[in-house]
Length: 212
Image 1 (tube, rainbow, N blue to C red):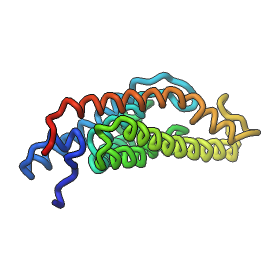
Image 2: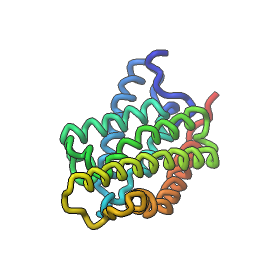
Image 3: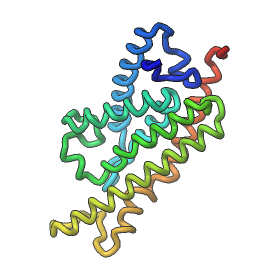
């Protein structure tokens, strides 16, 4: 039981081999491949300042729903480690200096997002589109909270440093800066991405053989 990282309520849990050794190996490979999917989704981006538009929220939601929370969180954690180690897996590169980038709050927020959506899938939401979509919206809302808070902190640090202010930063209203930079441009697109991810995962789930 200690090595059981997936549940039969998820796509990965259904497709994983039953042998304990093969099951563990499959999970490890899945985590690595999942981190590569996240890296690829980061590179498909529109360079909007201060935070680019990417397909990462779609990727995180779909992977979490398909994997369950344990594998999903491990996948996101590996992705973050890869990026901070210097691999160019984030939207505009990698390295420890990314911690002070305006977008890093979203990168951290992928962890609770993956947990919330993956947990819902583990509890049986994979075949129930309304529940899965609701979990995705909740996870996305938590992600936005991380992104908003981080951008607010970074904007304040820039103002306090006395450095030249970037065009996206309004020193007279940091709350509006964080809202307009981390939340407002993404809400509609993320609702659409969550809907697409939910429909896709539920569609795959319905094609799988029924479990006893």
